[in-house]
Image (cartoon, rainbow, N blue to C red; front, side, top):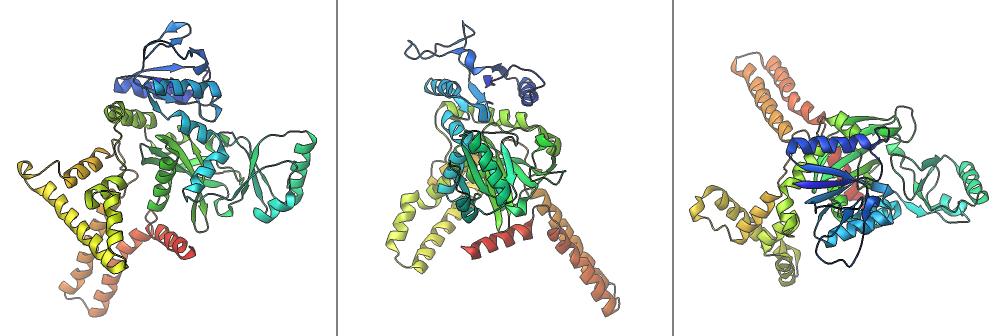
Length: 458
């Protein structure tokens, strides 16, 4: 395979993003991928030429790549977007595409898109001149976060502690006639000095780290002196990150999530997420994981037959599509018969899945709705090692602890010890599984309680 990385700067190691570009080249070499780093503004973009692919770089013809990874992020300008659209129309696979990069480069547009999908975000206002301080205080309160619409690595973000400080900033901006576009955000106190960067690749969480400020400030960015530690996101947080990536149509993204009193809120999304701190915290080869995903999905991308989403595949398999599910609801005006009809179909689908998995291949109809649906789900399976983030190891450990605890609880009785002593030893033994659950890094109890609190608040 042959690919390109679009990067707007010279490869000067002093530029913070350059070591990450080198990491991509290193991982590509190990995977046998020919990967070139090219600057967007050195292309000659001519529309209306004859043929499917006529492109020049530095005045010389350049061969069509199999894929392009854009690492321009928030610095993506109009020329780069135009170039990406040109590649897209010429059938080049883009990771990520121009439309979603343009959306994510604008922080307000990103939040508007997420809010429209019903995902939780901090309450946000667009800054206007003259600044109405009373409106800001009424809608957002103080402290308030002030951000530029475009920015990265924590730049262009500050906190005004009170009304007086905010008035000073507003007066400074107006006196300097700095009519810059900016947004104002409600300050999420529960997440002061910490957040979680969740890396999503191909619709899956492959790594996460909690970022913490070491100075007591509200910014937690590793690039600003914060520290990153490996983090196993609770299911609710992981699902929120995946939903954000799906809504924004990002193949690769870093979703920044804040801790809220009632759960979590999405702070930002990044189309070219930095990963140096993430690699140090988790030990994951991030470029290798990304390129492995590109390789594993390249055929489907070239055939322009993207794998269906899990929810769509399940709906097809169980109900014959979403129209089939709607037909069930149309035929059953009351909840109980509707629930029964859904349950029957789910049981039937479960039996079909067991048949697919246990019967000899010659007796299984691979083209049945169940067979097609299962294969759609199977082909979307993870292509990277997610052992550090899923619960399989924890579940296995819990089963071992539980089995040993039960045996230890029964043993005193079998040995004929005194009832009081046997009872105390049994209680102590059975406390170990409870201790495992309460101290689990996946946050089983915490995640469940936050979900219940959120549900009760709706």
